Image (tube, rainbow, N blue to C red; front, side):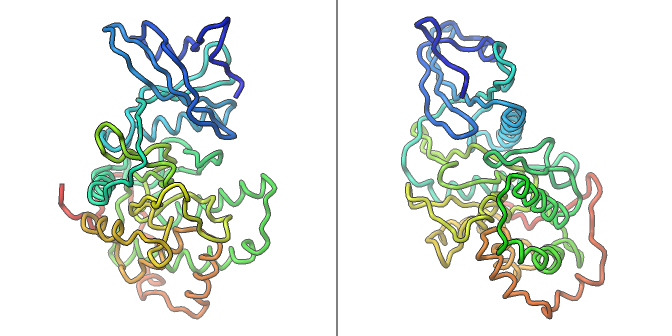
Length: 361
């Protein structure tokens, strides 16, 4: 990352960052806490005008994609924080450096995390609360702007149909893969059947036969690197979202599609859960049945429930799971009666929808 925090033997913080943190009187320290190919994260320790000390998390990225990724993270986190302020960091601001218009930043409250596993009951209850209480501004699936999964922008264009939104987003990521020169002939051979047969078979029943699903605000990329336990409060904190308003059972880490098999993080015993992460791991392969069953105490799976395992496979987006879906739903597999007999139910803005939400809050 081009931007340096050191200048003339002292600590330099860009004036645009200080403008967002208008109450700062002294920069105490800047410590790098993480770095990827597309972003650098630092802990900024300051003294405020009331003589108290505060720490902020500052993420810096460069270029147009860096700017859009940080903008999406700020807006996405702001939406989550407005619904469940105890579940995610308090976002403070984002913008472009005054001294370098190719460098951009996102700022939120800094948290000290411990290595504990998120409490099952509390974590699942809080995730269900986020999903059930969040309300899409227009009753549709999507988001105000692209959100990024790593360095991959997602197509969050508003859409009234979950099947259409999911299919379009998946095609977008596959096109991006091709543009970046990462062909996979084995996967490509399976895609026509996935789009033409499996996706309609599993997603269309959610929106036909009198059924509807409510767009829920999902994190989009929950895994052990994006959820921790606040050392001060003991509460789970989720961060680094790539979310949108989507189906509460879905996750969006489409990068997993390009992995042959599911990998469990070695850092901890957890591949964190919520219904928008159920596709990230499967009970038969990983030991998270306590999270799944607990989550469903607060928010039930969508109807038809008999398709839940198939939807979970679809949302997992692992290449070997795509092969399993093609085996499980062969060409002669008959869909539910109402799938072929009705047009897609595409709700208009403000349409009333239900998502099997259990009133527990």
